[in-house]
Length: 420
Image (cartoon, rainbow, N blue to C red):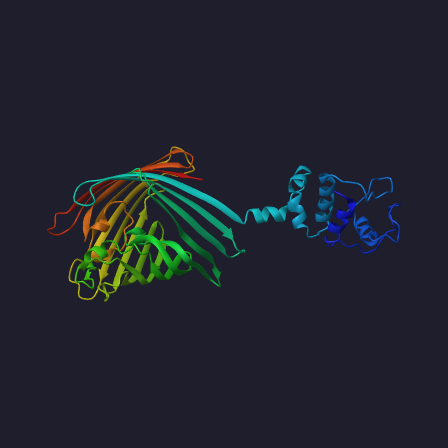
């Protein structure tokens, strides 16, 4: 690299000296085109020449010599991000930290998760087995001190057959930030309502939260297109233009939810409200065949100690003209819990469910409640951390529809999750 090129770069450093010293280099006469720039940089201590009172402008220089110039310019407060990026390795070897570059490198973080699962279902509801591999890549970017972006790409591979069936979708894209005293979230995010006993799926909308010890959360938007769950099986039917019976997938595109939570000693209390307006995805169904559904919940969770917790939840759902079972409850007992960073950690969870038709939209469980009109039964689960960031879990569900249908569902779910 020639010194003439260095001067062209140096003039962009923005380094100035309050007073010019006498020309320190004998081979740079006063009439030289670069005289003023060299004089400024020498006076600022950015360049020193070769120690024999010469600058050596026609000589080639090493990358380390250039890195030394950049380092000195940085020390003087010059904005040299592009040069620092070019000579980052040399600066690192010289022991010079490029703080601005480090900050920018930390601006975007990528994490991921790979989950293998196997599920075996007893007769009546989706009999047989299924096995799949799910991969998720998370991208987190810091927008500024108050706002950040999160995105998630998901790939699902069906391992049950040899057809190579898979799909890849961009499942999350949202921002989080502060607006006055409110915490704001907007975009396509994941939402769990009533600990997942009402809803546990992606959600397109906006959410605001206020408070800490007593916290109010409210949101509005559209639920995932697949989230009609058992509501679709119960309500949505119609006829196409030829008079043939059809089933239309329905989705909730007008959803409002609000939760108020607080803590009294070891007791956590909460109340929740959500309203669901439904639409349909086919022209064959012209009318809204499902009226708006409102769901209320009340929750109490008590922590006996850091390991054992007991919780109870009451649910009530309602819609116009429905005289069926509108109530429900869920009781949960949990002990410890596997932590991905702690090898050998483990946990147990047991639940009992008794939920009416209108008390859930898209349930969090891996059992087959979404295939039932209403249900009751129990689940037990165990999880264990085999190695750092490798956690296994086994869940068993024994459920049945209430009433006289006698439809039963027994499900064994197992999974191993790798995180990085």
